[in-house]
Image 1: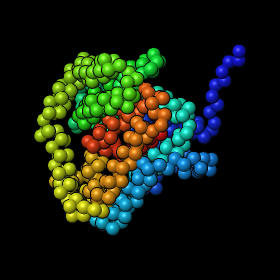
Image 2: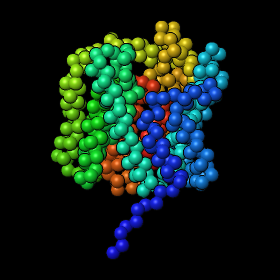
Image 3: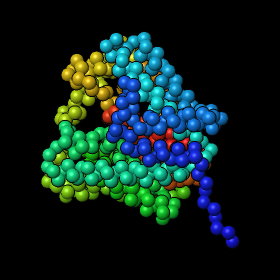
Image 4: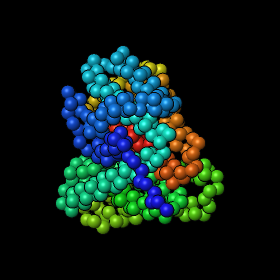
Length: 403
């Protein structure tokens, strides 16, 4: 009997795996390039594009399904709206937004194109990004613990421990993905990997002090697990799914209790943030709700094609939020590109959900399908409360779920 040969990983796939290790840390560091702030993941995307065009052009074209086409169409209409409608004082920022979104959609396209019909390579990428995300969770936790033991806030609101809402979004996403794997694991190895990832990301998620991601995590568990149970058609017993799903759902208080035990300073911060979950008149919640309300009202000035990228800043600055972000990608796309742009965004997201959940073969990789669907659900919901959708990791994760 000959030993089974290890899979050969070529140079192109090694380049893709570099992206798996860069992606979870991309939201931390900006790199100034010719007047445009970029992140290492954007630079990786540009390099990967050149390589894949030369080596895998046919696969990139074959991967152009409805989600890819819809995202690019969304971007196209947004460009037109920006050129025509964005006020002159915000046109520079609008073009920067367009360029960043272009790189993000490109990252989604590359993920979808390269990993379509490459299931083994896809598993290797998922395994590597899961490992790098755990490292990210450990680093964020250590940073928060050091800040908490120092007894001094490093910033306002969710940034008090130095993490913030975007970090909270991604830790909530990975925690939800780990929860999905725990519930639908088919091997002991998958179960253990899910438990380890869940513990690491759950701790970091709580220490991020971000209310939106906390809620997104809970909503993802409540909605995604019943849908997955239906999708898998009795492959798992209802008592097992209910027991594991409820255990992950109720784990959040345990993570809170562990964080409170770290230091009295962290305990005080968490008490304040928990109270603010149900008190929308406190913290940044009220200003966000007011901004979204005004943006929705302002959208009626051009409901079909929108008012252009970055035009929301005219509203935010009138209410005293200088240089703010919209904190809600769906609302921002409606205001910037109108119903047309928003419609293509929704179509693209539905395409991602279809590919993840209903495409042929999804039932053969149960734990991976569950992790991707649960994580993507948390990711999209959390992006409605902060600017995470402008980061490349958002689009890489969507690309994985769509593939």
